[in-house]
Amino acid sequence: MLTLILVCAFISLVFGHGDHQHSLYYPEVSEHEAKSFLHKRHAGHTALSSTASPDPAYCTQLLPGYETWCELHIPYCQEQQEYTREQRCATLTTPCAPGQFCMLTTPCPAHFAHACVDINECDSNPCQNGGTCHDGISKYTCTCLPGWTGTNCEIDIDECLSFPCMYGNDCIEDRINSYKCVCSERYEGVHCETDCRPGPVDVMFLVDTSWSQSEAMNRSIAYMTKFIKHVPIGSYDFQVSLVSFASKPELVFNFTAYRSNSSLLDAVSFIRNERGATKTSDALSFISQEILNPANGARLLSNISHYVVLLTDGLSTDRAQAIQRAQILKATYLGFKIFVVGVGEDIGHEELVQLSTDPSYTFAPDNDDLLFAMLKDATDYGCTDCNSSSVTDVVILFDTSKDSSPLVENSLHSLKVVEKLFDSFDTTNTNVSVAMMTYSNDTQIQFDFHQRSIPDTKAKLYTVSIEDKKGNTAFALSRLQDELFNRSSTGSRPNARKICYLFTNGNWAKTDILRIKQQIVNLHNDGISVNIMVPFEITDSGLHRTLENAKEAAFDPYRVYMIEDNGNSISMAVKSAARDTKYVECPPNIFDLKN
Image (cartoon, one colour):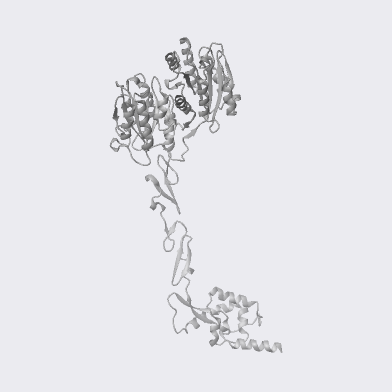
């Protein structure tokens, strides 16, 4: 009974596939889905005969059993489908709309159905260069890979059209979706956005030509000459202007007067002294109006730095007014910075550190610290050619002899200065290491460069006392390298800057001064600076002789620090003396590297 029911059901199903039943096989399906339909039904049917070979017409006729046979012989039947599609589609009463075509939507040969379906415009693979095609109604769109554009992604985008290279540098499209900036001269970075070659810079030298500078004028000229030889001069590099002052300031030449190093060197060599007082306040007021004046050739662009280099001895006739004017300029004129170089036969360090934009902008004339500090300041943030450093080995060389020790009448003034100087080094947060050596006719290391607690070090300072022996300063200076600076066991570092602070009252015999001078020159030639520190009380007798002796022995008068026993004098002098421990290092060919 069950078998009879199934057979009847099968006959009913097969013979119920008349044309009026075609709608039961909608919705429309794609060609791929139609073919897969045959595959899916294949496993559920039994072949009539693997050797049977019915007429091809059977694939389109409604005959019992042949539908199953055709589904088991898919390749054979598929050969008949195109003919059947053409026959069926020819019966459409309404042609397919634009963008559509007629196809068989039901693949079983015994009950084909047909309908109008959308054409897949992406079948022709219109998108080029890896673009992705998206089919639409009678259209398609291409999503292009980076670097391509156009309807079919056929156009190579020229990335240089957006002018990505800064400061006028050239752009080349070296590959798809890429470009390369060819940076010229000073510029670096993907877009030539970083200016790591120092400059452009406008430098205005403000030179003290007063009567007190008559013997030091050649040193001012030598300093400017050395500076100019180290920098490129031109409208896209460094421009130099010169202002002299004594009783009043005078513009000697503006920024555009000389466009080459050689012409500038000739120009500065002719500057001469004038009779008159040192009115620094008026000079500062004058340069504040002229350094940023386009009429003088100043370049007022965001990428151009402006500096004043003041060469003076710090002994202004109008000291109070000069310091006040400098403070006003710091607060109100942010467009330029004032660097100060101590040049003269006598140096007032307390004034110099207050005239500069910052105490760290006060410099000795016997090294290139100002030049390197300026080069670093004049490059873009993040450039690493010039780097700040504080890797310094410092020796406090303290005279304890009975004739030239600063410990006069058990005064603690000199030891207070040593303590303040030690504090200014900030050994906790910098790379400054301090050692101390005392001497009379022999030397004794109180402590070397190895790190120790600050309280212990300060306690050690105050154990120093005068010895009842004659001093030998030249001998003590000669022992510095062998006993401290050149001995690794003391903690000395071979690549550290080396500075000696010689504490003395300078009461040397004339026959000793020449030997002391020679030792200081020898140390300077070996890269060791010697600063002569002379703490004094205003009542000290023989102060003038002390100063003269110290200047005669020093490598340069700037290296002599006369420190009065009052808080302000100590503070200002120590700031100036400690500046050498923080410096900038630049490669000697810094300008050549960027060409």
